[in-house]
Image 1 (tube, helix red, strand yellow):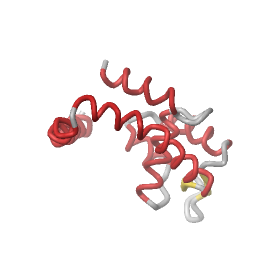
Image 2 (cartoon, helix red, strand yellow):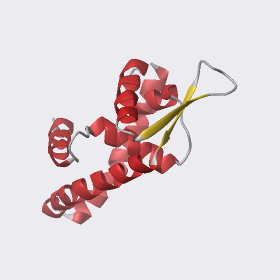
Image 3 (tube, one colour):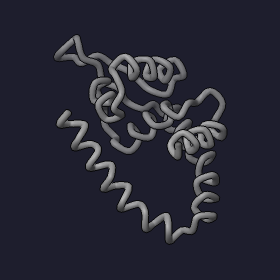
Length: 133
């Protein structure tokens, strides 16, 4: 429920036409600063390749990413963030930062900092289970 409520709140403030999945992919590409394959992205986000292909198609149409063929293996493609994608990601961060800041202030910065290590550990454990299953 917390995840759904947080997603709904953030989606409302994202720039027009941007979905949370779009922001997530742009943010991931911006942080990694290297090309990724659609399969790598699907694995990172725990979604099907079809779902990732759909997201990447929308991002490419918007001009936020570049998709190029792998020159050594024509079956593979590489995805990178475009300058427009970086600008869209930055605009999204500017839009969601006040929302996250206000929530953190209401809950208490110290309490938020205290829960982050627990959430990271939970994520690591869930990822282990996902990789084993």
